[in-house]
Length: 324
Ligand code: PBG
Ligand code: ZN
Image (cartoon, rainbow, N blue to C red; front, side):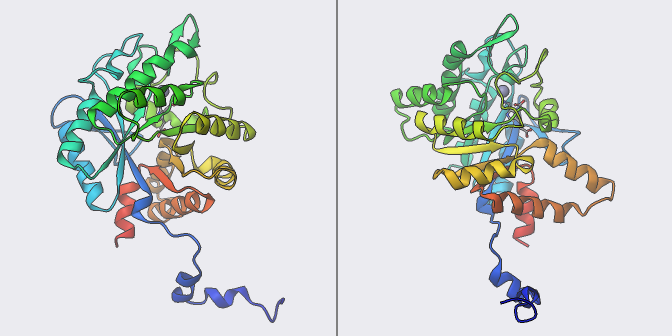
């Protein structure tokens, strides 16, 4: 059937029809809210390049998480900003580290909130790289033990899920072993499997003080030009025991999300990263776009591409939109 018999506009003529044929709908269940934990009390430092986002001391972080949870957001992703950095990232796996303290407080006050912890070393290393540095190279294999220790200390603090974001080879298997050997065989791993070496992480790095002091992350994070490599990374992580696969960033990599969704049968998460957030906020502030509408369209696109869950700084704003 062709025009004039077939008219696609027939099904777009009113909102009821449009609701009936809508293929993708967002739900607050889709969102994971990233939060930045920092030491001290009653701290709420605005992050300049991420309007509406803050470095939060544990007391304030619990309140922000509570607001999100009450809006229907099931989970948060914790990032730590430690008091001290050193060449072995010791505060990353310290029992009283910032993520460990924030996790314990959250699970105590809100047992039903899913607490996912970012497992990486860059915020905790004096040089800002995600692994142990020797000369000007990253020692992959020596880093694995520190990552496993970090994940295990998060699980011991009560984390419901751990999310390694370092992109070292073999880390998912090493973390799975460490968890299994210590009675955490029920703790899932959300693997940042296809994590690109992206310039969209800029605002995050100033917020988390995690920019590398020399060089860049190109020897461990993926080349933005590659997609077959993403499939290899994902396949390896699944074989090593990943439960959820993440693609990061989201918007410039919708093809990767789609491809992984089509070829892989595990849940797929997408990380709508700091630069994606900052661009929309900046254009909104300039009066150049309708920020709320662009936010909802962006999140819908990420879901339509195939993401089962979206890590996004927009989680609270979007949940408010969805709840009316
Ligand atoms: C650290 C980490 C980064 C992000 C999450 N974990 C930055 C990086 O790899 O340099 C980025 C998140 C964002 O931009 O929102 N491994
Ligand atoms: Zn890192």
